[in-house]
Length: 230
Image (cartoon, rainbow, N blue to C red):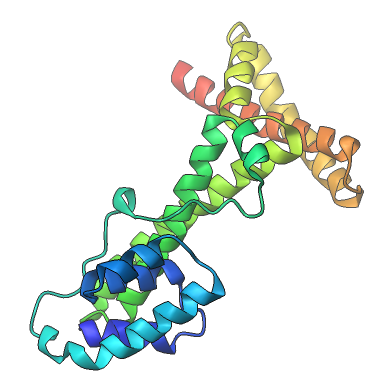
């Protein structure tokens, strides 16, 4: 099992660096190299990691009858945060909620890759199915987080802030007023979405995107409010 995991990593053209580091931490013996791999992700680090695992792989015969490599929990993933080109200054200016999304996404991306590699060598279809469902769940979380990050950069707003504001605006409305808005909002959304497709990047497009997000949130809040009243 251990040999299979390292062999798959060595033969994978993508060779996820963080996963390789986890493999070396599990089976490698050099504490110096473990520190080295943990503190970098340059082409030089990647080449050194490949060589270390390549040299380690043939010596793992005695490990095949021992417990297999265990995937850390999502919360315990020892993954550095990927900032995707953000400078330290830009990073420090981000709201805490947005920085947390970057942290979560770094862990989700690496963890789902571990699950995917585990599924490739799973013992049976049932185990593969369980892993597949967990992967889909984590990818959905990842995509939702990226949407919130994208919305923040394009609109300067955080979803939680928008929801709180829209909820306040709806609290005092009557059932009749809520029902009327429920009927009108879909047409507003349809119009704005068509308009946004033809617009170029800039403040006007951002305003339309923000209006779309507000109306999407408002629509969901109204549905929940009316359901609670019923």
